[in-house]
Length: 80
Image (cartoon, rainbow, N blue to C red):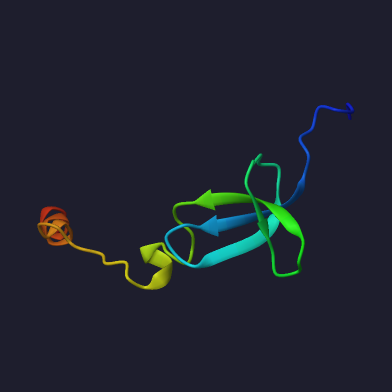
């Protein structure tokens, strides 16, 4: 493997800006912002728009709508 061509793999905090949710994980993403984490250390901060804490599918607010009865039309069309 060539030396010096891989990005730095380090601990990074991802913070959901639409909810009070943050997670410490490892990533190669670059960030100029930093945040002090629960352990007292400073880590690079990446702000994200949607996470599992705010996405409707994971929060149980996801609604599936059958617009125009598509399933019924499909069943009628291919009924034998």
